[in-house]
Length: 89
Image 1 (cartoon, rainbow, N blue to C red):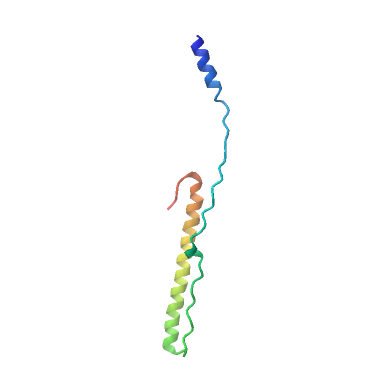
Image 2: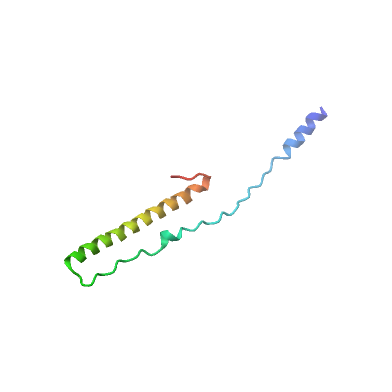
């Protein structure tokens, strides 16, 4: 009987638990995603052929910006998904 009372005393000792929130450091975005996208220089002389090359360079710069934005969105979604300990892909 004494053994049962000792077990009950041990069980009742675990009724209160304390929740401790640990601050998680914020992971900064990689520098290559926030770096300025280089602008192509205007050709001199500005001919028809040079304007076509400039259009290609401008579209390439725009595509790089869009890739960086997509990577930032993925990074932010992964950061938001880490609240439960998992990473979403």
